[in-house]
Length: 492
Image 1 (cartoon, rainbow, N blue to C red):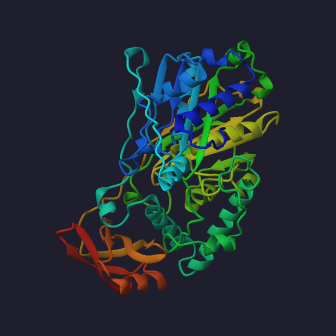
Image 2 (cartoon, helix red, strand yellow; image 1 turned 45 degrees about the horizontal axis):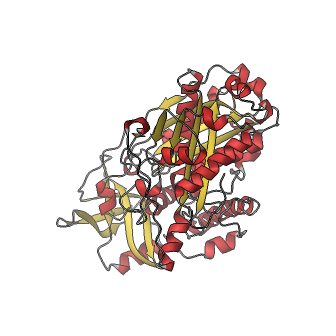
Image 3 (cartoon, rainbow, N blue to C red; image 1 turned 45 degrees about the vertical axis):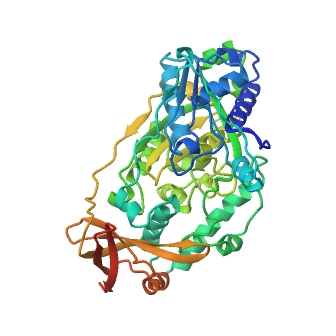
């Protein structure tokens, strides 16, 4: 992994991480043997909402290759999503095992802290790098499939924090619908465990050890979340992983004691949040993890180390809750400190988790670790089971990783006269509540969204002080804006 470097561009940090991975492997000839570089997509290239005024490379894998002296024949730029580091590992581990590639560098980085600091200070850097010519062609996979519906965005679900707050409320409704503060305390205690791990990680961007009380007291972002419960992307971080066969690694001079092996894995994409049969969870996420464990002949209590994607508390608990026999690793399921405290470097966080897991598994005979990654709104999922035990890896068949398909989507309609509330969220701005959104369902199981009219403090305050789940919401249609407006409530 790369440490923070003042004013460095993302490509500088990615190259620093790649050099660190090469040095860690202990072979001076590895860089020249790299035939493929797959680079995780930068945040600035993932959405028009996050442009970078300083420019960027038009071929990030080549930018890294030039800096480390690698001659790759193939360069890939991933789609967006926090699942991508694990998804790329699964893809290229399978290709390497089939002989389609010999040595692959997976890499990614963000310099969002440098960028924002420079803007605040009135500085400007030129991060543009332009490569031309067919010999350095790039396989750019684009942003990828949309994970949200336009109607969700029109009704106030704009940023990830709004979607996840809705998921979180659905989980609260299922567990303790009349004890919201108890639920928030549980979330804060989970986050405090992550903060404790981050405080001991030299690569953490936010290493201050916070108590659950401090986490709860931070500025509110929604009626459930404070700003210390969620991923923070103002980081300078890079991470890289090298993939090859055991035989090739030995030929290149890598010590077998430094090798870590993928045993199994799975990935899949779920339907949009509003159409999931259970808004409190993702069925695809559950199947990705359970399939990964089953293919390694492991039970939920057999995992020694875990890193569960932690952009928001529900992203963690939705995975750990499925373990009927939880292992000690599930108590604080991170090897880094998680996205709110270690740092949330765009789409690349789980590359850091893989790198950290690799260090923790080396030389630990029989130990296994699980890395689970999530992109979108618990939309895109990937998991891998790793071990540092060569005998255990040798006993496994050539890795073939599973693709999990989504189940049926509940119909989502634009208009409705009303229905029963499944979950809600209240959005805050500068510490004050400004908008509420509900996800509701009609008698014939059609979903719809509704939001508060502009300036409707009365409804917002009602939803802050009462849980509307199970009540019937009445709708007034704003045809001009294409919105369903909350017009009142009828008790169930």
